[in-house]
Image (cartoon, rainbow, N blue to C red; front, side, top):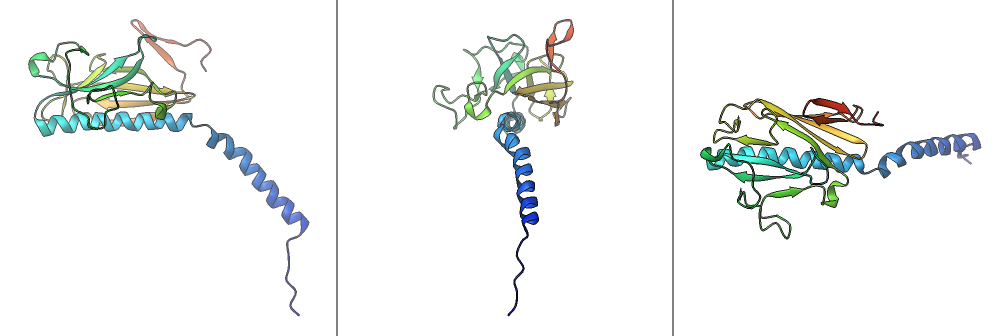
Amino acid sequence: MRRTRGYTLIELILVIGILGLAGALLVPVLGDRGDFDTQAAVRRLVADITFAQSDALANQEPRRLVFLPDPAAEGQFIGWCIVKVRESDLANEYDPDTANYVSDPLAPKGANGHYIVNIVDDERFGEAFVASAELDGGSPFITFDELGGTITAGNEPGTGGEIVIRGGSSGYRISVDGVTGRLSVTDITLETPELETGGGSITLPGAG
């Protein structure tokens, strides 16, 4: 008769130990959805900026993605919207009551079909929020002309800028190139959060 070799007690203990160690390392990571939610918010913003640029090209008229200020936190934003603008109105400030919104067939109830994205109130994005948005000289919006290039409120070529999205313990910086509007994303989770002020930036108390 042929003898079948089984596992020894030591081998079983080693396998159980390895599985236990792997579980201890992976479970906390898998259980923390914060970073995944923040990444989802970043992907949504990148997609919407790209859509605004494409829509300007397709319709041969300017499109503007405007960040919506958070009334409870100065300098932060709850989300963004995409609006149609005429060249004669480039210097006008965003007015939610008179803005000519781009239509969004997938807009949630209460948005009246307007292209408005509120990541703070959307549970899909967890605790994500727009920590800062400084574009084309400090403006909280990015404008694309009919050629798909970025322009300032004065109808000059755009200079680019940065947008920071944070959520929980993670953070990402979206850099926008001037004129072309090319986007790049950088993980800044390990960087110290800063609060932008009129005179520069200060480190938040207790941040590290």
